[in-house]
Amino acid sequence: MNKRKKLPTSLLQPSTSTPTAGSNHVPIEIDYDTSTNSFNEPSEALELDKVREALAHMILMDELPLTIVESDSFNSFVQVLQPFYKRSGVEQVKEACERIFEAERRKLKTIFANVPRINVTTDLWKSEVQDIEYMEITAHWVDHNWSLQKRVINFVHLPPPRRGVDIAYTMINCFKDWGIEAKVCAITVDNSTINDACLVILKEDFEVQRRLLCDGKLFHVRCIAHFVNLLVEEGVEQIKEVIETIRESVKYISYCDVRQKIFCKIARKLGIKERKLILDCPTVWNSTYRMLSVALRFKDVFPRYQKRDHNYSYCPSVEEWEKVAIVCDFFQIFHDVSNMVSRSENPTSNLYFIEVFRIKEILQEREFDPNPFVQNMISKMRSKFDKYWGEVNLLMALASTLDPRIKFRLIEFVFPILYGDIKAKEEIQNVKKTLETLYGQYMALIPSDNESNVQTHQSSESDNASSSHTSHSDSLSNEGWQRLKEHIKKVEYEPTVKSELDVYLEEGCMKIDEGTRPSDFDALKWWRDNQLKYKVLSQMAAEILAIPVSSVAPEEAFRVGSRVIDCYWETLDPETVNMLLCGGDWIRAMHGVKKPQKVDDSEIEISCPIK
Image (cartoon, rainbow, N blue to C red; front, side, top):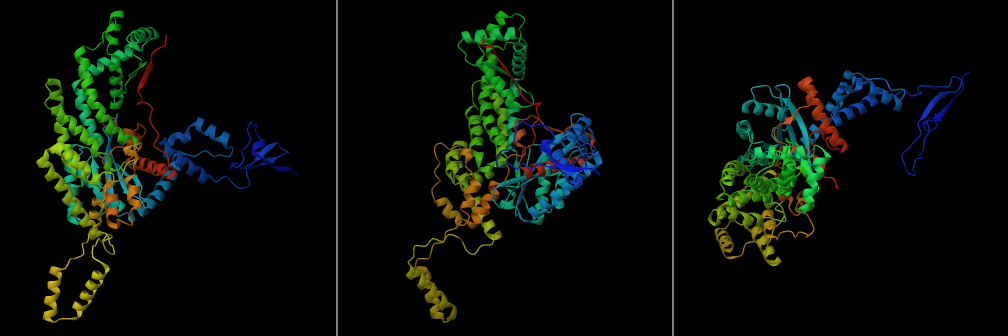
């Protein structure tokens, strides 16, 4: 008869550490046959479905290829962890991914059913190898905890020719599929003419079914990250030859230690403390900006190095360095705006007005610069800015007034600078009128007992008298009493009823602590904490602040050009690609992890030798 006993797994292999107190470590018992000196499969069979589900989660979360399950090295590693693991095939894991996708999709549909308004962003992906384009459609909303949420709801293949009407109907079908066609409030897209045509069709279709907020003035939002990238492209175009020269200079000097030592020796003699050069990633413009700004600090070193090394032929001229310095001044402001996008997963729309104003201000200040180089660059940037500003200035103005730290103070400050005193008054009145109209729409849409804030200067006796008049007038039809009632209305002071909007705007701006960064303030949290005071206005504020100002993912804020589809995805059918990308986004949200970063876009820092 075989003798068997249960051994904890910790006894089966040497260990140099012991579980800490309070840890969740629980030894797993394994069936060990002492007569044969071998392990038997556990009495409770390994739950392969759970293993495959966990494997599917890993594949979706990290965007791994399905074929990883066929890798010999992967299977060898897993079998070391669990000797009874049975190899899964691609189709089995794909089916597990599809089950997870469908389950999460049902959950998301339930959430959307209870959300009053949803905003949408789109972003295009391209293939480096094939003529394939996909459109990523993302839904944004405010959850019950007053936190911004977003999920990718479709990753759809766009066959050529890509036209505005095709994109519009693709989006309409997506909205109907998710049951949100009556909830879409605003759509944020890049600045292409195809998207302009698409939004015209969508706006017309939506207006047939229901009334859009502010008569559709907030429906079409232009992406701020794409807009800034267009301005950057104009600056890069003006000095592209110089950028290439500096890039080659950095490559040349970093080629060997001898060159670096000579370069750094010259820098030390000139009193330059900077000890590194940067080689940029050309597809990420803030990397190029850093390369240029660092190279500017060594501008006096390069010509002196050229005298020491006659093979070096990439030294920029004095005039070229002046152009680089001018462009970098603009890039600094552009960088601050895009940095706000990249550093926040879900930035609210109130954060951007002051930054966009800085762009507008510098364009106005340098418009009549005597330098022809500056004039030419400003002219091209100004035309792009005007197109963008015309579409978003109202949204940003409204969002800023719903920031309790700012209210109307920001537009009162910046509009005279942007428009002049006379035109500024008209623009400020337009914002006020739009805000009142918008509030009126929410009053009609959101049920409430009464206005939450009623201000009256009458005494309690006057209130009682008024109530008495009202109750008597209902029962008396005598003409004399009716005329007396009308007379009393004319001569006596009527209670002044103030709306939530009036009360909010009349109160002073919230004070800001000196050490607090502006971007650290959570406007949605403030409205959540004050929702009992502002029952209707808080709901309106939450939905306006939730309108996305950028359509790109934070990690893509500085990227030049379209996002690139993974080469593995190009081999899959569109339905599978949609399942993998959407499912991955949902699973990452479930586990609270960010999308894995690619390492091929990183810049290179070249440190100079100390001696």
